[in-house]
Length: 204
Image 1: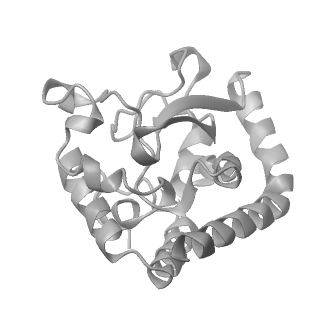
Image 2: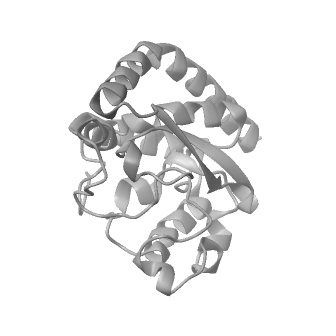
């Protein structure tokens, strides 16, 4: 029953979100194109529930010439030089995630859940793990759909390790409820309003 309610909530909120944000899509797309004449969107394989791969859709936030064929490499670097001026604003407010509402409509994602990550680890931790399935806590987080926001996204500092972030994800899986989802969505809007998604340390 809970899964049915969560899916109905996700679908309804994503549909309304797409309808209300459609005028913003045009402005964002125009700003991205004007800055470096590259594509407005990018698609990249990410791990979903049970390890099933899906194509995530986002607004492009990096310079077109510095994106590989698969899209952005997920390397968390403070003041990443690959990120455009428009991209910095989109990331700080999470507006780059708007196209992912399509993933929610399709059922690949939920509004709340662990962050959707690529299968391969691309940052400095690639010396420790070949892929995310080897990170402690992966099995717990893979039991639910990835989300636009979640415990790790809201509460975890950006600079901590995958294993530490996966502990937040495991806590969400253990405590998940409709009311927890509502709380995390509310907090996410607050972080967006303050433009603190790229904040190092605490976002709240």
